[in-house]
Length: 271
Image 1: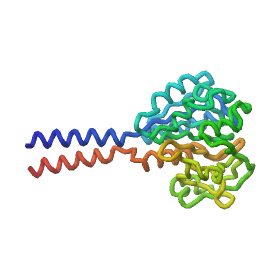
Image 2: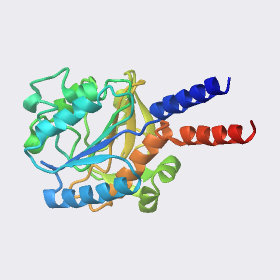
Image 3: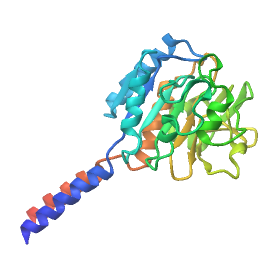
Image 4: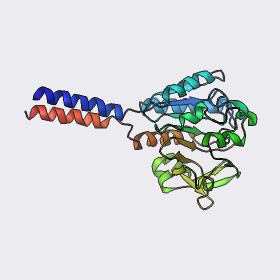
């Protein structure tokens, strides 16, 4: 009986560990838009330090020749049953979304946010999926979301940090407001499969937001985050806090398995 109990608990610990396994993060600064590469690299370096301290696995793709490596990372993490996050700086590698919108449906980027993993793409600086020198323009976002007509305009839109935004990102809370140049148009996802999961900073009676987490039903997420020309905000601190919250909120923790180990230790002492 004792051996059966040991095996059952061991199996339960392994199973719960697997369910609550943390995801990975990838950062791409090979090409950037509305932020120079040197600045983006500084933010990426800070990101890497923060993720290392929190023991979240992160990979930094810093060359414009790393498109295929990003594609391989996306393939590896799509459908792996945990939340993974890709961070961009105003451009999207053509290896995961073909330039000039030549792959309107079924791109690697679209598949990444269409699994039930809950994977997320975060974007800083320029219009999400716009692409270097307007390679994709408005259709980039529209195709990946499958929401015709959605756009990201309105320069200098003051987005006031919400109570939830302060809770998720204390760094954002200290700023109090983001003057977004490319806020997300919340009103344009009405009657679609997309929903606002969390608005961290609101504008125009809740019809605009930046930063914001939007989710495709029970599938993946997009996170426009401080979409500003030449941003001076602490992007890495804000983005790290959002992604950490997302991973933890979704159960990306091994704590339950550790608690089971304690329970098993107690059982042994009480046998």
